[in-house]
Each structure stands twice: as C-alpha cells, then as structure tokens.
Image (cartoon, rainbow, N blue to C red; front, top):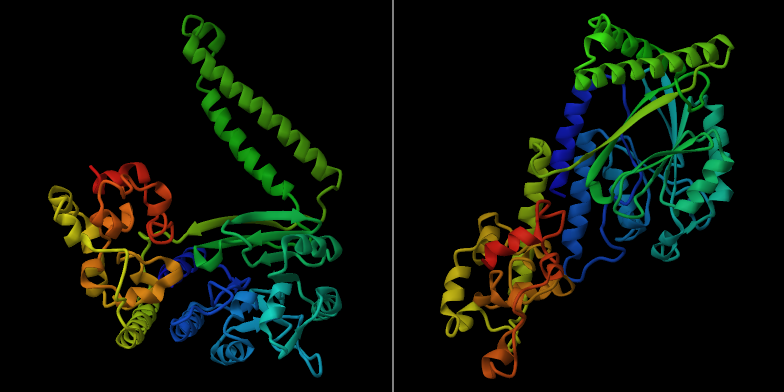
Length: 467
C-alpha cells in the first residue's frame, strides 16, 4: 500500500513532462493479495481495499478490470467498493445469475485528445469459486464478440481489453480478434512484460500489486495497424548521416595522414563503415516509400516501466490516506491483542536467557538494528499491525501472524533465535541440542523481501549481524 504514494507522484511527474492526452487503466488484481481473508485480519484487509480505491480515485484511474483477487471479500463487498469508485469496474463475462445481465459495466468509451478508446474486460475462470452462487462467470467466447462489435459500432479508434484470463487464452483472443489493439493482462506472475505484438494486438503486463507502472506512448494512425514508421526512421537516419558527414569532413586524406597512427586510422574506418550502413538503410527506406509501401503509415508505440523504488518521492495526499489506514489497523490490532491470551509455553526463550552463556554475542547483537526492530514499529505506531509485526518479533512466521500479538517482552525484537532457531532445548542440554550456527539466505529472505528491503544483499548484510 505504501508504494501508492510513490506511484501517484510518478503519475503527476509523467503527465507534467509529456503534456499529452492520456488514459490510466489497471488490468485488475487490485484489492487483495490472496484469495481468502487472513484470520484475524479481515477488517483490516477490507479497510486496505477501501483505501486503495480512495487512492485510485485521486490518481485519476478511469477503468479497472475485475479479477479474482478483487473478489476475495465477496461480490457484495466489491459492489460496495464500486459505488465508492470514481473509475469504472469492468467485466464483460461476470453476470447476474437470474437474468445474465452484467454485474459491472461490460465496456466504456474514453477519449484521449481526438482518439476514441473503447475499453472492456474479462474476468478469469478461477474467480468463479468466489462468487458462491451469487453470479455466474460465462466463457469469454459467449460475451466478448458482442462487446467488440458494439465498441466498433461506437466508432472506437482503439480497443483495449483488460484481462485476468490465463496467458494462452489471451493469445487466442489476440489471434481471433485483430480489432483488439491492446490487451493488458492482470499479472499472472511477478514480472513486467514488454508489449508483445500478436496479429494486431499488443499484449502487455506490469508487475502485480503496483510494484511498477507501465507507460506506453502511442502514435495512432488511420491504418489502425501496428507496424514500423518508415518515414520516421528515414528522418532519424538522415539526421545520423548529417552528423557523421560532419565528423568525416574533418579528415582530408586519412589513409595517408594516419598511415603511422593505426588507432586513429581504425576510428576513421569505423566511422566510414557506420556511414555506409546508414546510407544503405536510407536507400532502402526511400525505395519502400517511393514504391508506395507506406502510403498508409502504421501506428507505433514506445513503452517503458518505472519500478516503485523506495527513494522515489511520495504524494502528500496519498501518504495521508496510507497513514490514516495504518493508524486504524494498529488500533484494531491493539484491541485484538487485548483479547488474545499469551502463550504459556514456547520453544523460544528470548535473548536475555541466551545472554547468560553468550554474553559477548548478545552485546554485539544489541548494537545491531535487529535489536531495535520492534522499537521501530512503536515509533511509527504500527506495533499492532499484523502485516508488519511478525518480522519485528522472534519466533513467529507469516502463517501464524496472529500469535505475534501475544509474544513475551523478551521476544519483541529480531532476537538470537530468529536466525539460530528456538533455544529452549539447547538451554536445557547444550551439548546434545546444537543451534544453527549461521542462518541460510532463505531464512533472511522470509522478511528481507524485495518489497520491504530492495537493497538486501546476503553476502554483505550478514556481516552487519555476524561480523
């Protein structure tokens, strides 16, 4: 959620720099990370979903596709969320059980400058299990043709499909419907996918959960076909030729002048070789244009991704939404902590017990950031936030987050046992029950994930704790 403030600020900067008309879309998988609410965190996760919608409203999103990860809290909750959304939730194949009318808008028509852009969406089949009989998820073959036909009738210059279908289904759609110009996939994995042309469709994807944004600059032409702008390439090559000719004009008779200077002669030959290649490309492009192969120029695009790094600036309004959300989640966690009984027995004994035999090691640990991990949450008023807490205490993993609310005082930090394993048996019989000497990389990665510690380097960071 914290990355949204950086995302919003990046949107503002990009819009200010380009000053071009634009639209802002999301393929889906927006509201939740998992397909079921986490026990003990249900209210907090739904509050997070509502905060995401508030942020998207401020960021100017115009449409989002409905994915299975948007239905985690049920269809009624998504209906409620949609009423709070200033953007459109789209799905052409999610329909009411009784009359088969769409639950959400199947399509919208947007404009960017003089260009009309039709947008529709398809919800992936896995979402059907979350509907619990309240609605139906129809095969895309039953609904998409009519929507595409309608968008064409409405004189859409560009048609965009937001899809949470499997990649193979998306490819089949691209092959079958060449009037779909862009297909934006809800991320199936954690990767960005540079626009891949298939028939006349560009298939695109950005990393899930807002870890990056994709920006596509489009030069749309009447041909409504993707291709190479040969006239543009010719202009670029002619400019390159002019620059090379200017550099080569400085040489008089290079073969004689640099006869005893092989390095300079090599530079001249390299420049001359580049000139010959560019001239040949110019001749080819001129011939293609003269022969009428580009009377109807194709549409072209440029695409780039921006990762939401921690050093990017934050948007003040979105930061306020995130801050208020964290305060409310912390308040709920505090209430829950008062309802949970502390564990009476644990295999974890805490750093003070370790210090009875390992005094020097504990003194060294106390100088590390691990020793102040819980304290950092207290300063941020997030010590009851279950999404954070389990990585700031000892003996709790992400599968048992709720138990982090009831750990003893000596376990409220990243203590010795976080790296070396539970110590009760070792404390009773040290010779027989050996501890893990050096934590493996995978143990560190339980908490030092790219989302929370993008600069983590096991080889160097381990020395901060184990010099």
